[in-house]
Amino acid sequence: MARILITGGAGFIGSHLCDRLLADGHEVIAMDNFFTSHPRNIAHLVGHDRFRFVKHDVTEYIYIDGHLDAILHLASLPSPVDYLREPIKTLKVGALGTHKALGLARKHGAKFLLASTSEVYGDPQVHPQPETYWGNVNPIGPRGVYDESKRFAEAMTMAYHRYHGIDTRIVRIFNTYGPRMRADDGRVVTNFIAQGLRGEPLTVYDDGSRTRSFCYVSDLVEGMVRLLESDIVEPVNLGNPDEMTVLEFAKVVQRLTGGKSEIVFVTPRDERTKDDPHIRQPDITRARTLLGWEPRVPLEEGLQYTIDYFRHLLHLEGK
Ligand code: NAD
Ligand code: UDP
Image (cartoon, rainbow, N blue to C red):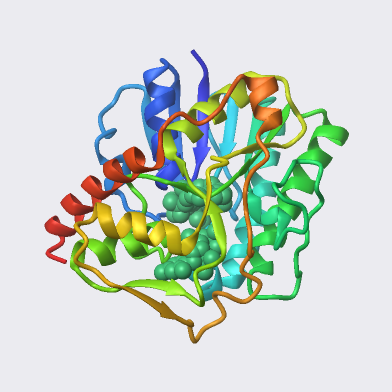
């Protein structure tokens, strides 16, 4: 049994990691300030004898009593609407927060896993994206606050590995979805599902020709656990290579939510589609060969679980 800290542990992915690591018999401490998440994500864990929650902003000095075997650092503002609204908080959590979490790993001699992102590849000129690609990021564009904070976080993680000998892991997560996302996080999965369930138009930005590849959360969590247990210091992509255009994706969600919504093409007035990657698909050769991992949940099945969750959530909230 290991004692594991998850920063961003009340978030969408973080809360699923809490569930998984508790089920595996570990002791889990979740740390979060609920900046982009809701306490209901971890409400079912309150009272669990191997679970503890600490409300804390990771950009401030982090103190944990007792020993720590591993730190999974997920705290971040990952959705475009959040990081466009809070650019400085985004940079601070990626830079200062990662520095604090790495300092904590050093103090405890703990293993450290950074949740990085496919956004480190920017608007890619190599397709699909292997981990060896250095990316095409506009540092001064609106998305730069998120992308560069994660690129800094990767550089900082490797510096702690090389200089302080910390045992580190870096996972580059590609678009992941599932229950416990926020209905209003502005991401394409939640926007389309909420719109479909409300019978509102599905808002496809611009001409809908950009591509993404969507991974169900249980597949991602399995990959992250395997990576944590491996000895791979190099970054590893985790995501589903099943690529489609946003318009194709809208048609699937339209059908699965009952087919009452029309699809509309809109151009957002803010900067959310500036530097929006045109194509994205993970090359998962490294995860396949080194972790024996690949995604198992087909898109329609994962979407059905997610739609069921949002049907319940929106009903509870009267929306
Ligand atoms: P999320 O917003 O649900 O989770 C992030 C969590 O971090 C939230 O609970 C938030 O409250 C918390 N947080 C933010 N600032 C904090 C601070 N200063 N101190 C403490 N907690 C703070 O989003 P998610 O999708 O679960 O993302 C989890 C991680 O995975 C992030 O690091 C994100 O960059 C990465 N990621 C996610 C995706 C995806 O498709 N979901 C893709 C690429 C990378
Ligand atoms: N998108 C869209 N309609 C929406 C929300 C998003 O067409 O209501 C597009 C967005 O422009 C992007 C893709 O869907 O090309 C994925 O967006 P998301 O915010 O989910 O994540 P990203 O992969 O850009 O971080």
